[in-house]
Image (cartoon, rainbow over all chains, first blue to last red; front, side, top):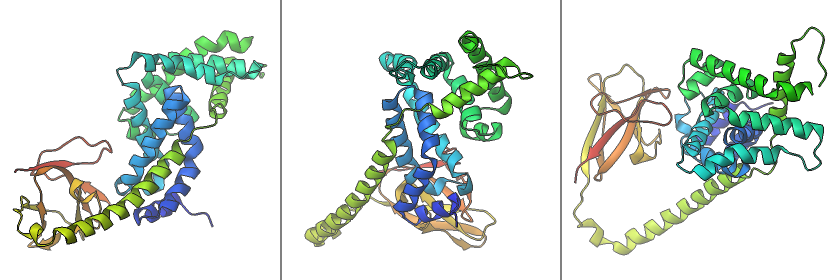
Length: 179
Length: 154
């Protein structure tokens, strides 16, 4: 029988750290992906994810809808990523645009690696708001209502951000894609 | 990436982008392991701190008893239709089981002894609904739940 997220959250509230480890393992791929694409480098993504997971555990009693644990956890992670992006550190911010590309490139320079490299390059040119909305909607498959709940932005504003992100990605990647 | 007949190239393009982004995360993010290690270590430290505190209290003995207590009684109350209300805040680590309120004449209340300081808190109604205290100032809360703040003076 599959144990639901809500059941695991209830166990975590009783102090069961193993249940929390199971929740983390269950959503790990999504969390790693989200942090990496929002921040653009593995080091910041690792710090943000650690920070978010510790905070979420300590605030588990404040998860109002345990059956939507993943969305709640993503909201904490997105906040931690925003905090990192807002740091007044120009060197760190430049890295967002550059290191994602480094990580995306495969050593053998295959066609697939080149395509990913171009995608990461294009993604890094989006504004943080657009990048966040695009990733949550299309890569993490959240609904606009869920994204609105976790970011505080209105649904129309989110749709606009996603549309603009799509337009920009199409514009930047069209030539590479056709080639 | 060849075009598929009948499908706009730009949509295929975006699907390719999304697919690459879903698959294209480099391995090696140790954030989850670091977080779980941090939490496990904090739990071990908690046990050690409790043991150390017990020893310290015993060692201090009577001297502790006649030190001036700077804590103040603070009464928290709420008028709400509910079957149970608990008080959660910085003073009890947001533990929903620590400070239940009692109902008297339609009002829920609990009185705590709090040392001087600034505390964020909220009422948890029926285990689900978060309510701020209308009698205290509201404050920012990163989890987007209603939260109040109280300052206990020296």
